[in-house]
Each structure stands twice: as structure tokens, then as C-alpha cells.
Image (cartoon, rainbow, N blue to C red):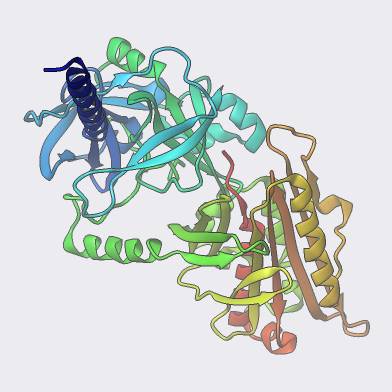
Length: 499
């Protein structure tokens, strides 16, 4: 055999060994992720360090029965072996071995701003899909708290057990910049080079926006070395006094603990969530908007800053003109069901009345999306653009204001209605409200109102406004006014997710 031929065979052998090694490594990585069901709640888990040693988010399983783990179509019961409440982590013991291969922890400091991976099980799929995300450096929940809600704070939006929140406010977390994270992602590992760097924990709804984080890899060792058995009677995140209804665990139609009726309801929402609204901005970029989660108006309202709560209450200021029987208040909105829609590239967030039909049209801005009240008297419209720079976003806002001027509406906000954080280099943000009521000089009755919100988040722009086609008809019909207030509130809710 010639030397050249032997070298050729060695190169071929090396090539196929590399392919085999990459295939095994990739397979092993996705093969380590499982689905976890804690009663009616679903999340994820990952085998770590040793086979079948399943680590998940504590809030998925705390106080819930039965706990089940599903892997490759096989489902077994599980119990909580250890918890590390400070980091919202739990170690599960399977009732029977499944042979789930473990992933190892990443050693050292991960290279931030690289592409990381997280894992997602589509409904009906036996294996998870690989998704990519960008992570920032580690921080603490206390530092996130100082940015998103000064009073009463992020602490009141976490799980609670014995009056203490978990995860703890000093817990080290990773900023998770991924607008596609949905409910039921808690417990999915974040990975880099086939190693675990974190665990999606999710977060809370703060000021009507998602605040997303992941538990850092170092806390896996704390769970395994310092974890303790769960206390008897540990409360769930949904128990009385807990406000963490927006932690990142949720419902899935493949939950083996569901009744047939619950499966049907979950399937209906999954179908809606899997059908995005596709729009085009002025540059022709395709932007998808997905139905992310469903909740009551009251749940969102309770998450708002005091200023935004007051802004919604102020919408009802003219109700004093009606008799007591005809008068409306914010209490009339609290039990109404709302759908939160999330943009896939911008993280834009829209909270709209349940089952709204979208209508798209085009103008000089690009694609304008509108939803209407059932009667069609009140219309909420919005425009969204993804830009490459802050200058482009500012130009988009200027064009939007020009459009308002051409509509005969004011385009300048009162100084009290401007929130300007453009000086924040790491996360520039600008938002302003334009409110323009008009009243009859003789009767004092309102004759029209114009309400809009303009937001720049880093390089992305969102403009929203409400219009009424027949003010008199709307204003003198109690049900129509209720829809008007609902859509005005949707303008206040509309924003960008907080990462």
C-alpha cells in the first residue's frame, strides 16, 4: 500500500470520526432534556452530572402532585429529592430509571455575547428543538429589581414559601435576551459547546412586560452539594398570597395530568399561538407576532407601576358625568380576559382583548395593524419597526408623528408624559404618551379623545393609537365605552419585554 494511499485512508477515517463524534455529542446534548409535569403545570428538566439526575425549576414542582417526567415517549413518576430554594432549583428522583444521559456543567466563565442554545419540545415531538439566544453577563435579581419596579418590587412577583421569596433577591442570574421564550420553558437548560451554562427560570410580569432571566450554572453545584429535602406542606407558586403567576411554567396539551376537557382547551390555545401574525415594516423586514399567553386584565394591572395604574384609572375620569347605574370604573375591566402577543425579533409586547381579529393595511409607514371593538366603533392601531441604529428608530418616530399630524392629531407629548432613558448606554429606552381630549364648551361633555403611545427600545420602534369613528354613539352606550377603555388600556400595556 502506497504512502499516499495510507494517508488518504487516514484522512477519510479522521473525517468520518469527526462526523460521528459531532453527531454523538449533539445527540447526547438534546437527549439530556426532559419534560417535567407538576400537576397541571409543565416545564423542562435536564440530566446533570449523572444519568437520570434530573434538575428542574423548583416552582414547576413545588407543592404539586403528581410529578411526572417524560423522555422519549416514556413517562415515569418522580419525587423531589432535594431543593435549593435560593435559586429556585429542584433535583428529582425517578421512580424507575430511564437512562437519561447527563450533560456536564460549563467550566469557567462563558464567553458572553456568543450564541447560546436552549431547548424546546414542540407539541407531539419526541425530541427537543435546538434554539439560539444571546446572553448578557450575570447580574442579580436585586439589580434587575432596581430597574423594573422600585415599589413594591420584583420580590413581590416571585414565588413565596414561609413568607420568603424564591429565587432570592441576591441570587445570581443571567440576563436572557430572547423574545421567543414562552410559558412552560422553565427548567430548560442554556448550553454552550454542549455544556450547561444556566437554567431558564423565567421571571415575572412587571409593568405589563416580561422580565426574563436564567439561573447561573454555579447554582447546580449548590443544589447537588447543599440541597435539602423539601419541607412538608411546601406551598405552590399559585397558592394564596403568592403572586408569581407569570413565572415561566405553564400548560401543555400533552400533560398526562390533564382531563380531556383541559387537553382540548390547551390545544385550542396552542393552535392560536402557533399561527403568527406576519407584518412588514418600512424596510420590508418580516416581523412575526405570536400569541404568547392568556390572563385576566387584573393580573396585568397588578403588575404595573403606580404611574401606569393611575394612567388607566384616569381614563375613567369623565364617568362622573353619568348616573350611578350607567357609570363604569376600572373594576369593570378586572375579570376580562386578555391575550399577550409577543414579537419574535423585537420583543414587542401587545396585550389585547381575547380573540381579537387583526386587520392589516399599508401606508407610508409600512404595515399598520388594527383591531376593533365588536361593534367596530373603536379601533386600536399599531406600527412596529426593527431598525439597525438608534438614529433610524428616532427617524421612524418622527415619521410616525408626521402621520399623526396629517391625521389632524397632536404629535407632541406633555413633559409629564415622557419617560426618557436614552442616556442608558446598555439599554436605551424612550416612551411618550400623547393624550388629546376635547370637550363641548357649553355642556362640558367630551366630544372626542385621542390617545397614543410612542416607544423606542434600543433600536426598535412601536407606535400605537386609538381612534373612534362615531364618538356620540360610542359615548352614550355603556358596553361601547367599556370596549373603548379596554383598547385604551391596551395602548398603555403595549411596550417591549424587559430582559
